[in-house]
Image (cartoon, chains in turn purple, red):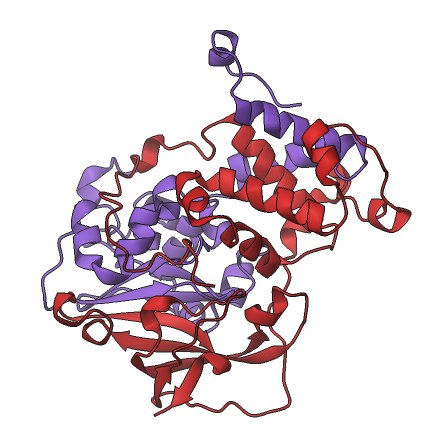
Length: 208
Length: 222
């Protein structure tokens, strides 16, 4: 079964921990799951499938106008061409930020999120607070993330109510002329691809 | 259904209090990992789809849904589906002891370690072509229908009765209201733009709009 964290040696396991262990044992006993497969699923999302994938997609779009065009027109195929496909990226759309338009992605009804490019969503993305406020007060949400946009920037909020998954293409930061894709990818945060923040300023990172 | 999951525009949840991106782990406890893995693996048994999974979580008592953490809701939904689809009995869940075994048809579909990479690389497509042409075109004015089905739906409450404009036709996708009941029917799906002022009136943010993906049955011509 699952490994033990050190705190479990000093505290008795919670009712929840016991219930999950009991459920997994039952499903193994009934032959409904292979625990080795579950370990591999967990490992994939902890170590392989995460926002660095999306950062590479964005960095390629910033570097290659032809790729950017296909990313904005046929996102699923463009993203798959970099090797990112599968569950929760079957129907991708990429929405582009500009000096006059800022995009923000939410799923008010559950927690839909483009796993192959961003990994599993952070706790805040799944929280009722974010889901409730992103559609009704996006400027307030952005301000809470330290992103203050003037009134002349139009905010577009994308509520992921279907199986279409949205990825924000942030603006390429000024002062990055001549940077390689690898260097650019270091400026692309997960939060900038959800749309709650902008990409990092080159001044905030050591040029890799 | 008008459940506690449909939170768009609700007040009272307070600040978002995001963990810093650089420090947030993918999972916050071992039990979360196991629930995630169990939910993904059992989905491949073919007894339910994503709409059924969502509906199983939404059908909890509203107080339970909002009190639970995210993976507690996944656990609750998984337990509901395991029992409803006959893979586990309520008595087995309560005792954690297997009393009856499932048939070869189910056991043959169990996700094995050697199949995980392939399973992750292929997701189920929601696209489902239909014979009828799309009723709306980009630019058309539409109203989200004022409907309150007791079953699963992906038309959030905050758009019902509101005027919007078709932004894009996504093609025809599996209709979630019926998919949650195990019926596979395609229907045209659109991205619809709603101006913030139409949704939130005098409390709307300035210069903003919300785009919502809505199926044809959720829309009427204006």
